[in-house]
Amino acid sequence: MEIKVLGPGCAKCKTTFKAIEKVIKENNLDVKLTKVEDIMQIMQYNIMATPAVVVDEEIKIKGKVPNENEIKNLLGL
Image (cartoon, rainbow, N blue to C red; front, side):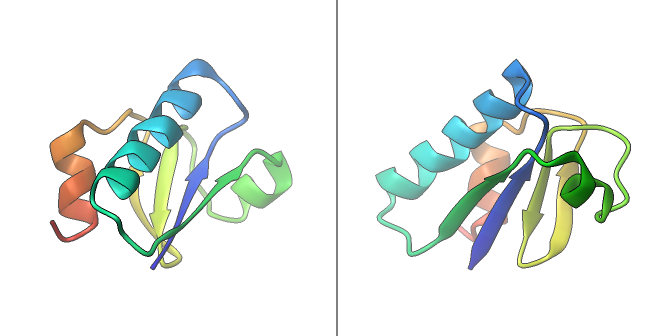
């Protein structure tokens, strides 16, 4: 599984990345987590609000910071 957090580096984007990272570590998951800050790459996903969470190239969350339960649902926990 590959997860990308899209955002230009704002506080909400950083919070989203850290929250997902925390859930991955706590559950010993084999997930590739990356942060995409390049605006041209973000625009390829056709989103208008960040942060956005992309799981295996499918946009799952956009425009808000997910809570821990939402993250666990994304990861199938």
